[in-house]
Image (tube, rainbow, N blue to C red; front, top):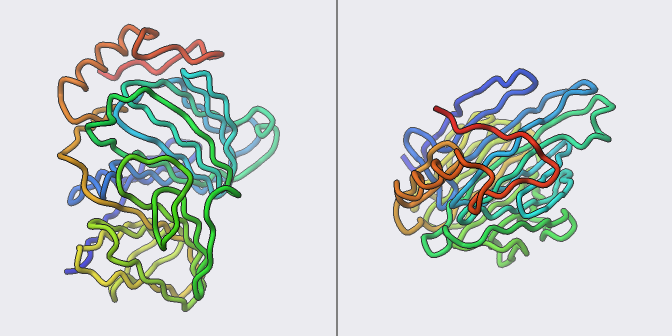
Length: 289
């Protein structure tokens, strides 16, 4: 079989639903992508929104990408950044960072829809202990282009001879696609590992049905022909394999158990040299037992 279908684990968080596709049973990673969450869509009443207290990360880069809604990012570097649909907030955890994710106060006064994706990208060993960093990239700064029946926005990495301005540390691609009814799009064999995520409508990938909110992981030899009967939103993602397996424990990603253990110990003493306090935040999520 040229493709493998991953179905998500569904978590009901009360205010909205989260579908986790990576890590999956048959594929823990696709290229350097080690975590893939789909939140919503959910209609949130006034006063209700995202409210994720400060928590730590190591060894990864994170991206929250919104189709609808908004968010407010704070981190231990002092970053304070609103994110709106189409924007990229790129947070490089490296050896350690702390951040919170909340709904901007000005948006809590009205009913609104929250719908988006959160991904983690594991870092190569040469960069997993880099100093943490954060950069914001507005939607208008990201390459957008049209192919027959499709509009594409390149979020991360390189594809179709274009490059995103977001700094990444291994060969990868992450693309938002709006595909017209009856249209076809081919995902070329540019990278060793490729996947297609059906955000809102079923797709057909190399002749195989892919249900909505599922991920099709392509074998290296797969043709990568994508089609849809209805207008559809989809994400293309993948890249070259990393330099060895990665461990994932709570919010930590690392190439060794020693790095995970050190991060666990450090978080019990928050704030400290590895995990500095987030300015303006007085609470945090404790280490799970």
